[in-house]
Length: 404
Figure 1 (cartoon, rainbow, N blue to C red):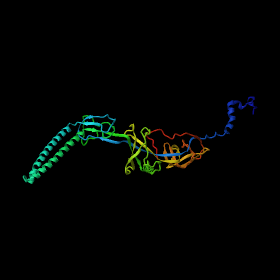
Figure 2 (cartoon, rainbow, N blue to C red):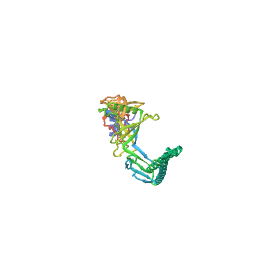
Figure 3 (cartoon, one colour):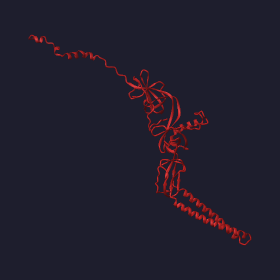
Figure 4 (cartoon, rainbow, N blue to C red):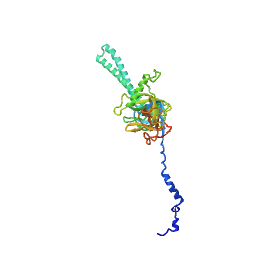
């Protein structure tokens, strides 16, 4: 074997590697020995369980009506001569609304008065005949038959005069119907007929409506469960349990009227009437309540909600509805302790109040529950709780409902 050349004798392989490559080869074992970074603890918003005396309200959907809604009808047939009101404005009882052409009725009165004159003439003649015959009959100058005939003629003439008088009175009444007056004070609507139309008759509908809107009446229906709650509350009030002044405790349940825009009517109302029984076809009970409406803000025909307080739960515990978890009819919440450990707790929910849920059992005052991200929480995990604020009152909306 030939001796190694001087060039090969002094060859160093490390000289062929760049400094960067050498540094990577040196640090590679050190990197493989480093530990993975610690796992980040999740952050979830939590709220503290609310404890307070909570009024429980029940809400019903209804429709407004005038406390008196009276249709205006023509009681006689004829052509409409005039319309003597402004549509959509208030009218007073006795105000002239419509006028019907009275020419045929004036003619009928004249004819009836002519018949009355004839009847009075016949009566005068019959009376004179009787006065003449009666003395003659007493002297036997005329027969008893003649006297009986004169008496009969006189009594028949009296009846004929009474019939003629009644006919004149009837025709005058019909003439009065040519002027259609407002039966009540209230607001009159848009006329269903125009001047010049023929009105009246058996098939004729109402000409208009007058609605008394102060007070405004609201008709609403409730289910059997709600009826029992309201009935018990009214019985308690009537017995004086909820009133210091027993002379005023008549079972009057104060109601609030919530309008279509979510605003609450300024005046509270009272139940004034109700059905005698539940409707077996729908299982509902109908009531009517009157609300003062001095400015005429509420009109008949509007949809509205009626709300009332049926009880007050002392020291009730409430959580946001979004914190509640439902699975096959079972409800639970995630409770977070002081160390951030999560526990899934079975609870028994009560009534809903705005965006809150009353919890009848399963939680304690001062505990914290997960507000949002319940799908990320698991029993036994540890989180970083972020105490959050919660707006329990929703924005006004016609679709809101408070359930009991």
